[in-house]
Length: 298
Image (cartoon, rainbow, N blue to C red):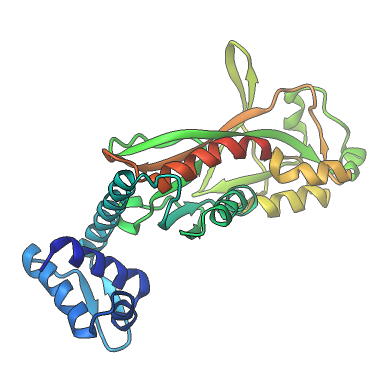
């Protein structure tokens, strides 16, 4: 059997979750789908899929092999497109991992617009605030906010920066007083963002000097940015939030930038992908589009 064809059958079987659907897609029989996968398993000496009458699951080696097969097939498609002179029309499936709120509000609209421009492009978006394993979970790239861990097998490109500001409701400020400087934060109630048990300090740029960092404590700790914005608008206290999230509330007057003379801290946004010699055209196109369009939403 042709190894590349068997890889394509294997990837399609995982994507569709069904041997029968895969058989239809390749116009082959269901048993032939099984033969392609068995060919790979015999060649590798491992089990790729656990399959019952009701469901199929990738094994741990199968997850890693699936991710590499998807990358290989994408590069083959790119090579074919290059020879055919058709790199202006991306095709195939693009799998992207996005943070929940930022992904839904800022990233997804850009990528969905891309699919309208290129009908041959399929989009598979996953919204999660955990750090996805790109190789094991088969993502083409991820969008991540904040500082990145140092990974030699990853490549990252900064595509935007979030502007972080301190906000509160008019009712809260009327009851508790306004702020003049960041040192006043300590005298106020704050609504904190906490993820994985960690509360990060609030950071304020100081030009050529080191950033000023304010350690914040409080009894209101949430791991959802929208819920923090809601709590701040309800008068529960100060909140340090990205401008894109609270822009509508600022315009409506339900939240106020309490330190307008402070320059916003710029929180980085990166696209991250597995290191590869040739980045598939559809991935490069999507990342370029995000780098072009995301700053306008910040």
